[in-house]
Image (cartoon, rainbow, N blue to C red; front, side, top):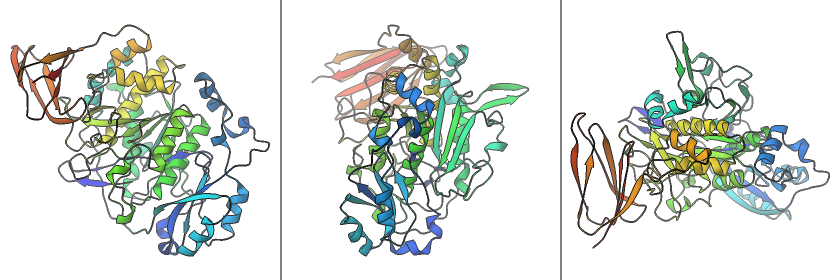
Amino acid sequence: MNIRNYPFLAALFFTFLQFMFGFSVFAQNYSSNSDNFNKTKYWVFFSQKDTTNYDYSAAISAKTIENRTVQNLPLWQYSDISVSEKFVNEIENSVTDKSIVKSKWLNAISICLNEEEVEKVRNLPFVTHLQALTTKWKPLSCTTTQKKEMGEAMEQLELSVFQKENLTGKGVVIGVIDAGFYGSDKSNYLKHLDSSRVLGMRDFVNPKQKDLFREKETSDDSHGKTVLEMIGGYNDDKNNSNQVGAASEAQFYLARTDHGVTETRSEEDFWVAAMEWMDSAGVKLINTSLGYSVGFDDDKDNYVTSQMDGKTSVVSKAVDMAFNEKGILIVVSAGNEGWDDWKIVSTPGDSPFALSIGATNGAGLKMSYSSIGADFVEFLKPNVACYSLNGTSFSAPNITGFAACLWQKNPKATNKEIFETIEKSASLYPFGNNYIGYGIPKASTAIKILEEKKVKPTIKKVEEKGNSFKFDLPAGKRYVVFHKQDKRIVVEQDSEKAASKKNLKITIKRPKDTNFSTIYIDGIGGFEIEWKE
């Protein structure tokens, strides 16, 4: 996971990912294993599996079978079958390192190999190809602070509408993949999470750790605690009993996949392991505030921006499989590189099948740090956004809670339907941009969509032949405007609020190199202007 320390926000921003159940982890903490310093970590992909006597009912849980049946997905899936133990044993017998992570989804294992072993493994008849993950490990000192900021995001998303309908995520099982959950047992907002609510937890970095609430290895191990609060927190103080997160009655599976001290590609295989674990346990909604781009301990591990195309990285391929074959909705932080040279959404948020979440300020404009969508892909990124002062790690959990409430409202909905409902309920839909996607989802609109009620467009398409556009801004209302070079790519954003007792006459002038402008007046609607010569 790439960690960035932004001094202006006094926070360490996190950004995203990893996988699940048929992923068996025998790995120790690599940073303490000196033998691995002369090796590179690889994914080794196999050509086939042994399907003899495979029984899907023994490989996946009853809850997973139920989820797939509701979504009309096949119960027998080749990707559920474990990798061949015969292949694994043959590789183990020919190499020195025995720390292996197995992925049934990818039909592959990850393992550390030296140069001689690479050639030996590559020439095995059942190996199709190898893909390098990382080279060396070295300590990286870092600290983090977190700030709870649930209230404003909940107001933006209209989560009081869910509360009025008693939608609290009840009956929905959520997976959270993060850097650790230390201190959750002492959180005032998580006292309601007992063993009936936390159905399982696993540490994929250090399998010896069994209690992620009370055991920690690094100072970053409490990051997931804040994420968990924002998804399902509840304030049970006698004088102030209310929801802190939208999904206060959901159930959870929790996974630690980020080391927190070192930053290496090796964490991606743990992420994949966690995904497979959660799928096999019956999870259909996953939040991950981890992500991969640059900033690894070894520069050779860094991605290049052209690889953020939604199909190159192993983790993006895994999101594709989870969404299209397993019926899982993956909510991913968009990333916090918006104000540096990288700028664009990191993987796996780059996948077209990940619901990638950006961050806005209170007005609804993109926060400067929030990563933007790449201009070289044809699909929209991020998908939606909401308020977060301290990183997209803390905007994504609010959308995860939002999704859980929708699934409680309609348990028979597919992951694709929930995905589309969230997008269509957002403030700018259908005129999305690469700053905040389709904008901020609205609970009132989402419920209407789920109930198959007609939802009128709130943004009117306008052709403007001049270089300015005028409209009325009602008293107390705020507008935001995104000026775009084309239908998606933003070049400028701006906002203004009218005084509480005074209407304003607003004139929007066309900036240079702008062909479209999206104007949104909060709670009312707006205009999609196509500037004509």
